[in-house]
Amino acid sequence: MSLIEELIEALRCLPGVGPKSAQRMTYHLLERDREGGRRIAHGITEAIEHVGNCRSCRTLSESELCPQCIDTRRDDSLLCIVESPMDVLALEQSASYRGRYFVLMGHLSPLDGIGPQELGLDLLEKRLDNGVVEEVILATNPTVEGEATAHFISEMAHARAIRTTRIAHGVPLGGELEYVDSGTLGHAMTGRQDY
Image (cartoon, rainbow, N blue to C red; front, side, top):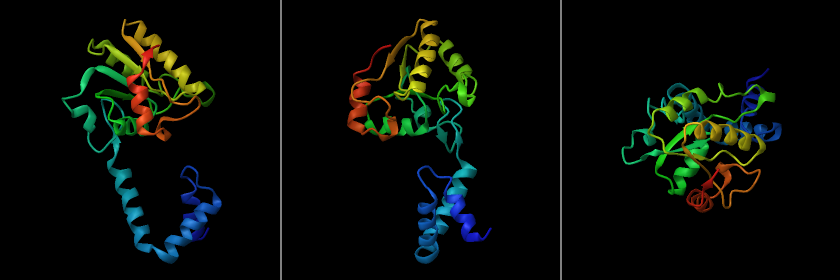
């Protein structure tokens, strides 16, 4: 395989990038923007080497604890459960939530071999057992898998007598949080309901 073909194939790992898009990107970088290509390569290498997961909430972080987890002004009694770090970013951009997060890094999907262990629900249980969390806010995506995951987590919270709410109002069924605008997300967070 030539270097050009190798680059085209490498770019296809990105979501939404098919063979033609990867081909266009490759030829653009090689014909018109080699410096841009170097910046991309450097950025990817640095991020892969230095970004890991926050030991508390599991979001992506350059340090042991992410900025949200070290912020002492946040409300420890509120714990928002999301599927991905992109969901944390979307909620933070809405500026409507000042509690803590727990990032599942996916959703329950038995057909894909993703169960409670793969989502770190054992870590979530420990967090719920510490007696600090008073409300769990379920902000999983409104998909079949997201709803099943929310139900599973709500049972965990209810077993510990912790209030459980679900975001609502304006988040479309089948949609994903990272694609919802910040105003809609802000409304959904303030209009959450018991679950």
